Image 1 (tube, helix red, strand yellow):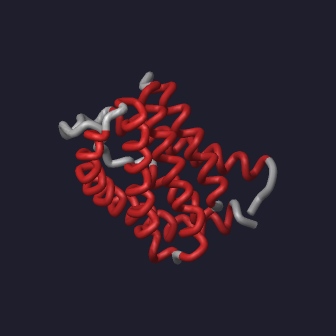
Image 2 (cartoon, helix red, strand yellow):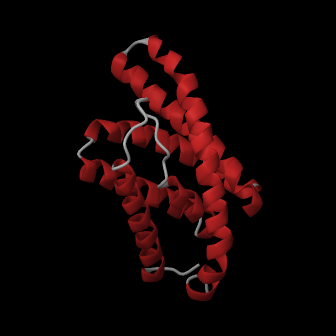
Length: 171
């Protein structure tokens, strides 16, 4: 792995890609269920975890969440994303060590479930009502499906980008 400016450049490229995807996804109309979206920017985070490492992926995730919250003007959503993203990343850390590139989708599905738990925890803190827990099954089903999709996409991206990364970035 490159150090210094090369590594910073690589992290910035991944952050820019994740932020661009996030902003584009904001333009997709909601399916009518609050909090449910594909989370396409997570393809970049999961891909980064396997190509450049989980710590870099965590930095990319944090930058994308903060900048996405600022750019979208959705400051309250920032707290939901931070909580969900943090739990997702904490799940990614140990899984990254034990899963192969052919099992990336598993990490994405489990990360999506953790993300939804983080969102519910923030919602519990904000609303101060346990009734919000009735929403957890909806978020879990949609999150698992979205996590499967983004995980398969990330798995494809890793397999395609690995040779390019080795040639140009991982010398």
